[in-house]
Length: 395
Image 1 (tube, rainbow, N blue to C red):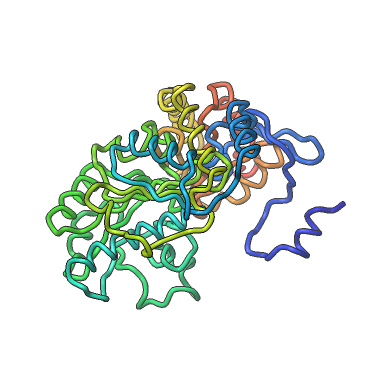
Image 2: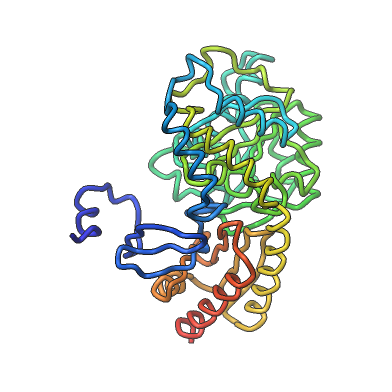
């Protein structure tokens, strides 16, 4: 059966998919329906932190399937309580709301900020300050704070968009704060915008500003959180804690689940009737979250990311020094990027043909977000393939 042809007939054409049909994964490798093996340096867009086929993870999900998958949030369930407890204990924050995705986590975070401000002054005209080149999701609210017009055009009228400031430019943010500002939102490390880590002084300045003005500070850690940057949560690297944090992607390591986590300052802002979800926090999804936290401890994931991330950084530095077509190398841990002087689409396509799964961040940047369990040998394998691709494509 021609699966790709069938897909084009039955699926909405909202993605420019690559011509491959993946069937299974083992460790840090994917296999297509013809049995071809691919080294995975995309991890399902930073989702499969534990790689493919971890037996403990799989068994936890099988065990939960044998118990119960869903109850709704009209009732308590043990996996959700266990998972939320682990999140609260590791973040040092107040309370958790489970969602189905990162986009929904952002929507909830925005509601927390708006309701917090509304309780003070009962105004309806509050604004958010967000960052240019940011990405927070595809729903209406998340799009309104996403700093890229190509995603907003046709969906979010200009009057419904956030006020945008330059990332890592504290003075620009300060200049745009007014009495209508209810929240400031940013990624700790910008992902889709090209892999730009936040500056310590910038994030510290946002915290001071929000404290002085009683504004809610929201950190989007959907992609950069869950150990990817060398700390369990990326903001820990900076010593700056948000009022609300959004998580997803590696939170469930393949099971669709997200969460927004609130500090004690705003933990009681949303009351019964203010927010809800049918599937969010169901026993199956939160069983995944719970075992992910257990495995992060058991496998010392954060320490491993620091070790392998440093090795990856050195190897990418070598590539950047070797090839004049590479403009810049940046990133933290296992979230790194190589910016080229032109589009990287041909590199991504050729790499796939050679058995390397890698994706872009914007038009000109290759994004390296592999499973967090990769070893040095996988970095070497990746750089060998990528070098041959660059020499072939950029020659």
